Length: 116
Image (cartoon, rainbow, N blue to C red):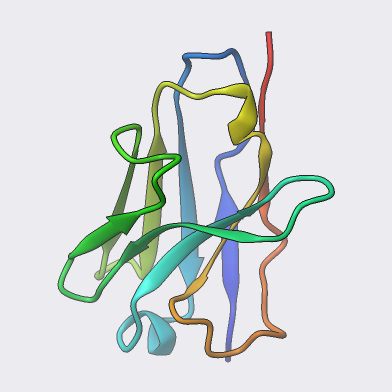
């Protein structure tokens, strides 16, 4: 079963921090690299950060140095620590495999709003 459950979003002031969590189906988590994606209103969904099964990471230029992706393989959970948040980080955040294996399977996402 393919399932992603995101949590941890909220309203934060510019410069603030949030930590997002995503619980994924165990069978998926043990096989695939995982990514955090985001979609702002009126924009296409974009890949923000990736972590491989072994823990190698990669980031979009827009978040490099501010966001950190990590994973807990025992808990089938991937995290996104977001620091120094900017208004342009406002979006719905989702996790999924990277590359996306099942394009029709997305979680409900978690909304991040950065505003004063």
